[in-house]
Amino acid sequence: MSALSNSSSSHGNSFLKMPAIKFTKLFINGDFVDSISGRTFETIDPRKEEVIARVSEGDKEDIDIAVKAARQAFDSGPWPRLPGSERAKIMMK
Image (cartoon, rainbow, N blue to C red; front, side):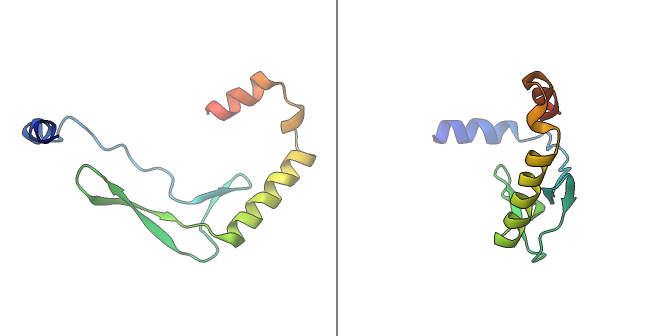
């Protein structure tokens, strides 16, 4: 383990770029939204042990809203009637 640690520290982290954090909110009913409580939690880069983003922290209220939206979309929306290949394209986006 120490050989691995020495090897990685001698190269530094300059060859690894941190990707931009695009999404930090909850995705509910087709929209990115803050949690009902407004609470967030830190996401830590394990390489440097630094905070790289604060992400919305969902709780029971958020889950209830998300489940209700998902149920309505499944029951009334086009999703269950789409061919599997079309659903796969959407999921891969």
